[in-house]
Amino acid sequence: RTEDGVPIKNGLKCPKGITDEFGVANYEKYLPDTRFIVSVRHPVWWFQSFYNYRLKQHIVHGEEPWSPKLEELIGPCSEGSPYVLNTFGDNETHREGVCTDGSRFHHYLSRFGKTPMKSKKELSLLEHDMSIHSFPNAKIFLMEIGQLSAEHNQTEADIFVEDMKNF
Image (cartoon, rainbow, N blue to C red; front, side, top):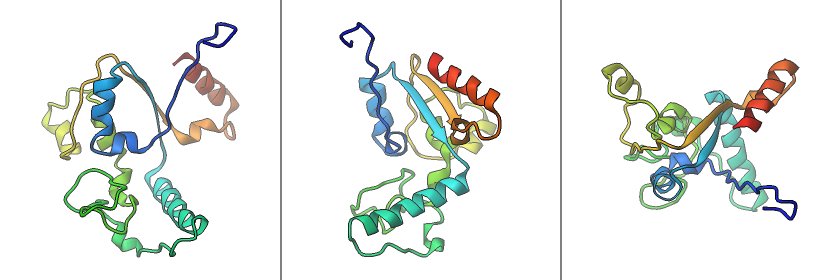
């Protein structure tokens, strides 16, 4: 709490937290009552943004230019693994976590186990080998990144801000 008695809220912004092999398992084990705010964006815009981010990081750090052919980034980030790996072990390639499979947000969200995932139809949409966890007390606030902008509709933006405050 602050000196005025106001509770302090802590947060973490870490996209890898739900895309790697251990993040969701660790949240389940150590922080089972966590409230998650998950933002997504259109898969094409996500890919473009992440690709450009990786390009810029190489320039900023004075590294060799990073410029894989876009065709090489189609599919999984790491052959033989359903997870987006950002490490450079035996399983990682030059993709640096940038791949089209990284935009399969529904796969990562399914790992929270918020739906039964028992019907054949639902399972057919989520064919992956990632671990599924149980968070009965955790809450998830799912948003599309465009909701942060009041550019198109101020009323909707105001409702969004209020919903976020109440979360």
